[in-house]
Length: 243
Length: 346
Image 1 (spheres, each protein chain N blue to C red):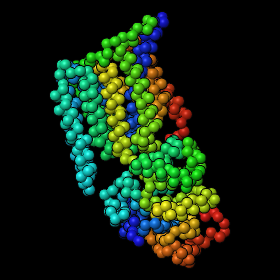
Image 2: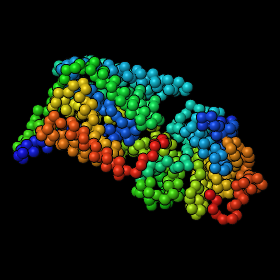
Image 3: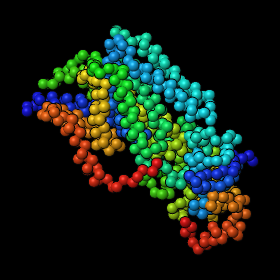
Image 4: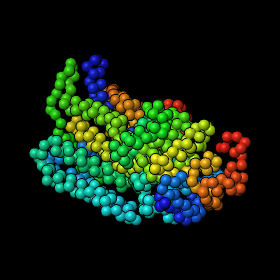
């Protein structure tokens, strides 16, 4: 398998504070990779920097091309897509307009096919297509954010905390759909605090602590690692309130 | 007061109000997309009006040389910004817009300008010149600081206004100019007479409002501009270039400004600095519309125009005072009604 995304020895700083220190990772075609870790470990910062929202030091390449000279818009056109933590929807526009804008960089014919696919994945969005994005529930907004990202037919979808603040039943739904994306030929880089759910669908995982990767391996290995179990999975048996 | 005077004043007010509406809409549009409060809007009015008036007398206006000069600066900035990764296609696109287009415009203007040039050609030339200046102004003054606060953008905006006004004095001189009317027709209606010019004002205002509504509601680019206004990061994440959105917003604003100028220069004598005051009245309308609402801005502009017409009849010395005082109760009401605004993050 060839690497779709390669990140090597990346450092990201906010002024003098180094939030991410010397991180390397890769995502192959058709692979689901997750980064788990506690709040403030630097996961969101890392995803945003890979997308080009923040500057970073180090090498990043996507589908064989160096990403350094590319800005966010070029990376979107190359097939990289981010669903950010705060979703960043167009709140005063309706669901369909949001989705249509997700296909801003692709041709009209492809966009129509994408729209069908997104509506099949998220039937709820089809029901709400004339509703303003800002008036949707949290779960629906998350679906819309993912749908909008998928409209651009990305090769790699980066999801930042898709389960944040959602009811358990909706979280299960969203994770099921993330799992289905592989069948549609989309690779996923998933950042999650809900480690149990993330490890269940991922092929490989990285564990991030204080700006560094402390562990990496197949999702099975990570899930059975005693340290991970104690820090991230330990309280899962007491109930569903993972977050 | 009798009914005839009332009707006259109303007619006058609505004609002026229509022009303020155009300018107010342009201000709201530019603010929504770029967060720039476009003080130089008035200069677009003056440049459009006076370039048109000069072309009508057969002279080549200095604004076309300004467009060429600004194009070179814009191209240099594009080259500097892309210095790390020089893509031939990007540079070719930039050269076409910033070098080839203004030079072609310069050649066309110098060759076509003459005492017998048809009005339509003069209008087209004046519009193209101001459109070029508007797009380059965004590239040079605002794109490099697009991420900064509204206050910084406002300061840059005031700077642009002062610079363009000064250049206006150089290009057009201190004397006022008038341009030829678009149409000499006139339609009597009861005690009133609607000149072809005022009908053109109404027609174009309505056409622009409908056009903007169609553009923002139904086209991909229009929706992309709205999306940029609603959420800049979200827009970038779907691949919308916010710099392109900014350029389109400035393009629309400069064309709207120039059209307003061309519409009023046959009615009133314009000086190099008149545009500022006209722009400010559009700004009042935009403020009443909260810098977000297009319909409210249009209605407020008609109100501003009507109040101006009546106050120039009853207390012409205090005309401007009364018009600008309109803004006070609006600001007080808005500050009472709106919850405390957080410092913007962006």
